[in-house]
Length: 397
Image 1 (spheres, rainbow, N blue to C red):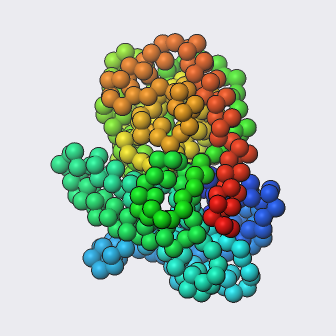
Image 2 (image 1 turned 90 degrees about the horizontal axis):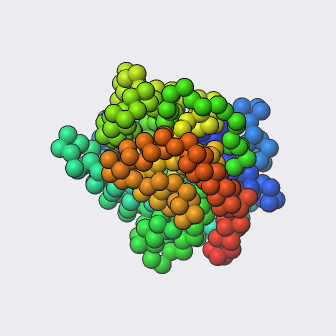
Image 3 (image 1 turned 90 degrees about the vertical axis):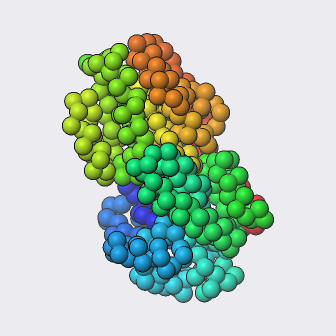
């Protein structure tokens, strides 16, 4: 498995997915070698129990001038030039020279620059691409959001250029690999549109639901909302700006004591400025997400752009949260999960749904219990691993 980051500790969507797959495959008897970007894992890392060997490489240093040069001269998307280095290529080559493998699986598009090298060095070795998102679609959605505001037109132009380049690169990867894994039916359709002859199978995102069992907590002193995620990830940053500027003021008119916790690592500088309000707390990195989920009255997922399925939403559901989300945040989830949350795409509708839930503790508890039961049934890794093994069988692996 080739990954863009060490999958432990698993504190964000991509690493959570990879760790879940690793743990399930190891339990099923597979022997796994891991090639990853980042420092070597700690001696007590859970990865040592799951992988026969772990090879890491430092990410390359890319300055703004390097990115601008690549924009003008390379024709490749910025996404796939961030992580691949000579050290990483050498690590791949040494692994392939030392050992026989049945499959090389690339986790996310960022490391797929290496996939053609596998086919060059070992033409008989099958490769599989695990798409965390339909990346070209994600960039296209960001373009559609940014073009609405003149101040964001430079970002819109960047996303438009990147979407075209990503589509070309992602199409080629789908064609070169033995098969592509998508996290949702929506993403599968988008990837099939790129390369209709390339096989695509759905392997949903999952979590270890028993890690989120609801603790017995008392009532909050003030109404509390929460949002979680990697807070330098652009869709998350945009979601919080939209929510804090458009929705939260409406909530505060009805419940002026309400508080919002924005929880997650690497908060963007613009989010840190939001923390100047007494109503908004930006935590930065936290050791465990569960206390923040268990401690909120309503979990909000106001995403305006994105693809894939949102592991943050699965975590909130498994924690027994009442959830108000946009259609984008709910996209890719099984219908039984969507039915267990409130959907609201307009600012007034979202504020109204939040206020209603803040005013009705019994309704919040009912929604949270239904969400937790549904996510245990559909989205625990134990229920998802068979879909990966079935996909490999379909791909002839």
